[in-house]
Each structure stands twice: as C-alpha cells, then as structure tokens.
Image 1: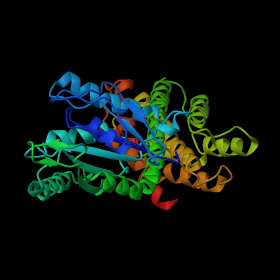
Image 2: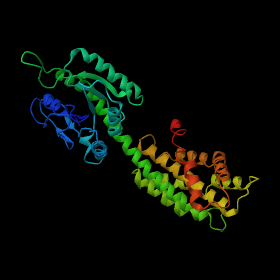
Image 3: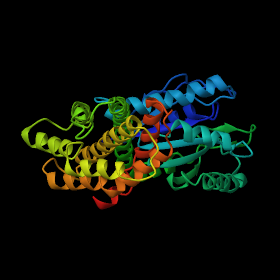
Image 4: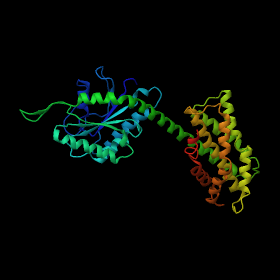
Length: 392
C-alpha cells in the first residue's frame, strides 16, 4: 500500500480510459468513441512513471441492469479488499469523472458514485471535469460540482479538488484545437492528497471489518436470546436460572471467536467474570426479585420468566459484544476484569428492571416466544454502543 490506489469512476463515455492513458503516458487502457463505455471489468494500471496505481471501473450507463452491474462491481471489489491477502486493493482516493461538455452534473450520477463507494466513507475525492474544451465554461462547471457535493452533506467533506482536464488533443478545425492540459495538475493533486487517502483507506477497512463482526455478533446474540426465552417459558422453578448457564457460556465463547479473543488463562478469567455477572450473580438475582415484586403485572409466570430469561441473556450478549469490541479495538485488555464486572453489574441493576418493564408492557399472555424474543432484541440491541463508549 506504499503506492496507494486511485479508483476512477464515472458515466460510460466520459473519457476515463483516455484520461488514464494520459496520466500513464502510454496507451494502456482501451478507448472508444460515443457514449458506450469500453471498460467491462475493473482493471488495475500501474507505471513507474507515477507513484500510485489506477483502478478503472465499469462506466455507469442509462440502463438499470448495467448501472447495477457497475455499482456492484465496485462494491464487490471494495469488500474483497477487506479480506486477508487482498489489502493491497483498498481504495485510497477516488477520481470522479464528469463530462465537461454536459450542461450540468446530474444528481443521479453523483448518487451512483456515492452508492458504489459507500464503503469508503473517509476516502477523499477529486472531481475531474473531462473534455473541458471550453475555457469560459470551466468556472461554471467547477461551481456546478461544488454545489452538487454541497447538497450531499454526508459526503461534501470528501471533496478535495475539482480539476478541468483535456486528456488528448481535440481538433476543432484545421486551424484550431484544444491542447492537452490539466494532467500534471491532476497528478500533483493526487500525490498531495494520497497520504490522507492511505490513512482513510485503513480507517474505512477497519470500520467495515468491525461492522461485519458486529452484524455476526448481534445475530448470535439474537439466537441466544430466543433460546433463553424458550427455556424461560418452560414451567419449572426459575429461582437461580442456572438452566441458562449453558446458553450464556456458548454465547460468550462464540462472541470471543468472532472478535478473535484468545483462550489463554487471562482471557478465561475475563470470560468467567462476564458469565458470573449473568443469571447466577447477585445483581441478576436482585433484578429477578425486583421485577417479580412489581405490582400490576398481569402476565402468567411462564411469560414473565421468558421475558426475564431472554432479557438477561440479551443484556449479557450486548455487554459481551461491547466488552470484546473494546478489546478488539485496543481500548481495553482481557486483564481489565474489574472494569467488565462493574459494567455488566451496572446493566443488570435498576436500569435493567426499567428496560424489562417496557418489554412487559408490550407483551400479553398470548404473545408467543418468538414475538417476545423479537421485542427483547429490538429493545436491547446496541444498548451499549453509545452511552458506554463515552466512558471507555
């Protein structure tokens, strides 16, 4: 990744291939006439003449299927770059090509760009106005680009430069022509922005991986919550809820595997401290007793037990996800046992009872276990993400 990767994107026929050849200083990319693009797959170009690699993309075309193909090709490339061994393909800068002969920047084209490159939220953008033959129109086109990006508030900060370019000589008649220009400025601007782009690419890859881990982790927590609801609904004594321990242990182990937390002795103590704060802990027992003592609950014992069981496991799951995420990010270590115990106990205290009361209010004696599990998941999901992150 010392060289960095520049993704070239834009409508078909905008002149991406001609631009790439001009930057490389040799005819490497196939070019053509008209509005139909010549690139049908993502292709990497590199040269000793420039200190970065160029990734050419399929052009956006006025056809839903072809447009979707172009967007998905970039998305697939982006996701693949997050896989082990493919790190050299991460995107560090985006060249967004806009046809200078067009009277306006269509908002849909910009939305296509943002959709295709949604994974690269931090990576900077240089807009290239291709075929910028008319000097008087350049200022107008530059203003058009800035206005279009300003309307996309989420991405407006990504725009670094707008550079009009004539990639190859354009003959007007026997006596007049538009000479190539803007290429040196584009290369200089790219070299200037790339250090930022290299850092941004790493950040976006890390965020993508973290989001994937979160999605898998929440899926496991959801399955475990449903299992706990089913167990809790069984009409047997629920005094200490020891019957949930196997679910809790399996949940914590599965989440540890997702976040790559090892199984050495220190990690085991970290795991055990999380599980101990679960159903067998003083905090959990107090929560159960406190909830059952609340007057006005008109639900049957099996429904109440199902809600309590599912809520405890949901809390344990969200807390474990949060704890392992802090370890994964390097903000905490598995040696921070007191921290994790204190955090989990705080979540199984009065705040826990208040949350469970809202679940009770949404449930009836006829609510089935799956519906109860869904209510619990919706209530507890990401409950640790915002408030607790500020305390780390």
